[in-house]
Amino acid sequence: MTVTAIIGGTGAALFPGRSAAEEVPVTTRWGECSAPVERWAQGDDTVLFLPRHGRDASIAPHRVNYRANIQALADLGATRIIALNAVGGITSAAGSLVVPEQLIDYTWGREHTYYDGSDGSLEHVEITEPYDSNLRKSLVSAATLAGVPVEAGGVYGVTQGPRLETAAEVDRLERDGCTLIGMTSMPEAGLAAELGVAYACLALVVNAAAGRGSAGIHADIEAHVNNTITAAAAVIDAFLQE
Ligand code: HPA
Image (cartoon, rainbow, N blue to C red; front, side):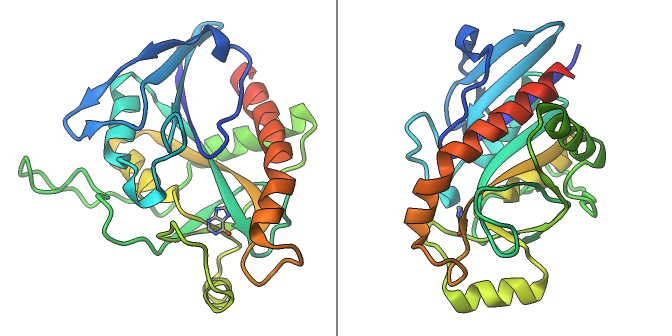
């Protein structure tokens, strides 16, 4: 029996089966997670769902209690986490889905580790591959099964937010090798690694990054958010059924 957790971002997707979910309130030693975790059965397996920004999407990216969120999912038995993240595209087109392979962390001041000295333990966890390669492959095959095009590969630049970027910042991120920009993949990926939970990202490119599109960013988001959520839900559904 596998326990798979899905962390949803803005505009949490509707998955078949979720209507039968029970709510599990979880408190961790790191405090409260963003919302009660939803849990439902999928065949012999269990699915957990947690909206990263809270039920009403009011928790800003730099204020999310990432440590509590990842701990809660691990405490409920999750051995793999699929993170859905809305992102801006530097080289990926708005409206597309991407399973990135790498990330660069530009965030600051977030509670980003379980090794904060509170229990005297310390481990320098390896995140050479921040996204689990088996999970990435499974997501890509699920997309093929679902008939949804996804790009495999890419580098997620994680910015602090909640403001968007300047055009020059996007140029710098591109020079660094980033192909996508979002605000939430770290510290999530690092914390999952610290707890030994496999973690991968399905990025929803909801807009062209600042200075790269012809429409305004918010107009872009409005135009692409619903379609990318529907496509991502189809990928997740196929992934869970596999
Ligand atoms: N930049 C950062 N985070 C984002 C963006 C963006 O353009 N779009 C969605 N999340």
